[in-house]
Image (tube, rainbow, N blue to C red; front, side):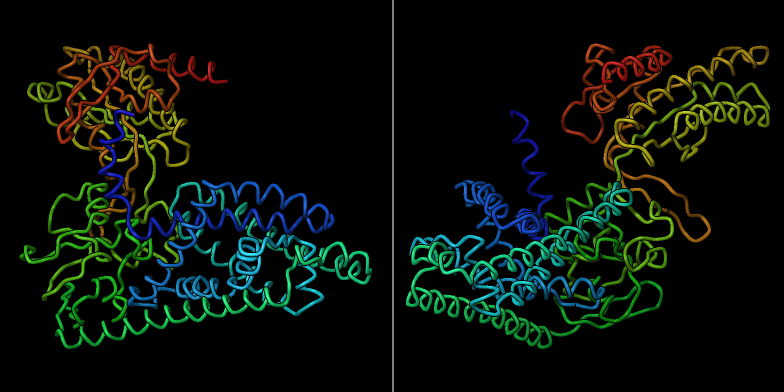
Length: 576
């Protein structure tokens, strides 16, 4: 608990209106799933539906849960109206305006049901459950079609939101078939359940005794009470439609003010220049003028693929919002000339160039090689460096030095590949290896630790092989750290390489450098030790200062990297 205040500012910076809307949407979608599963019990019987609704209401009407639910509903609706006002471009893809239109239609469609059930219970003590509601839908009126449309719209709207949320997650590709199956089966079973339950009620409603027991004043109310609830429903519906009209009117006023405020020029650095009214973001300007612009997340500030670098003076630009600053910090973009195109709304002429080429991205945010388009992933970075290579080169011919360094890097790469990693960058006599491109975090951490042990073993073999040509054995240093990084293709034209960027990579490099001062073969971050499942007392712990970090970092010092393989195996057996 003592560390909570330290992380609170970062949490605030990481939160935007879209994140609030997402959280509220997930709460509401959880309610929809619960309600749909309850409807699906109609395939068993109406009695089963009544049993299910008891547990459903017991949870959702529990006071703390009810407060959270209704707060989420009002917030989500309000932010939906705000999105209608805020959104300047609707030419992203059909699915995005479709989601907005469906979401805005839900309150108008659900108003009568909510007022009839919840407000009727609050004002008059009505006890409308499945028999009464199904009777009203199938016998007393033709509202079943309105309710069916509402169920379909609510489900599609929620599924689109879940898709936008999860599509950038590393597990989405594997989970997508199961999510699709659930997205089809749950509403299908729910609609069938409502139909079967409605048929049963319609048949039983012919029995006068059933009507006597299920259509009492306490259950369905009087005609006067129903008229009052209808008037309330009509008033609230008109008020909601008025809010939508107000948002549209505000859009018109904003557009008029922007036209009167003058136009600015955006120069793309490739000869392309467009003129836009003040207030548009750079990404919105690109969409308006059909200029290709990379944006995996669709302009939600959840990725950094729309990044641009400002040409010339950037001092007159608006300050980055908290969300923009958070994203740029996460990807290590500390240069003030680098901004997110989806967040930057220039007020004067601007020249820039894009850092990611749009042609590498497909319309859905997935390319033929989805791991190469700028994706956030949990990876484990392993940096290894050869010690004493400068002294080695002083007394050898250049070709001989290159030969030994290549043998060293070959031995290191072999150990990395054998343990499921990928050699990524070769810098002089050092190498960056990545683990977790096709494994979960725990497995990636274990692979990296075993790779470190394998490196030590392979270097021992190399030292023995070259013993006649080496004055001293080859030594090395290894740094291992895991965390969220951005992976993708970096470079220019024919000089593009796949790599990882982020704080976790930088920390691994600095840990490797610390092995010199701590006189050890490897330094493993506490994050990797814990995620891999190694015992707390398996390795000695030490607090170290990392350049660029305010707080010291807990690490584990490994004097002999060969022992890591045994520790990993022992941890795996304990976990099993």
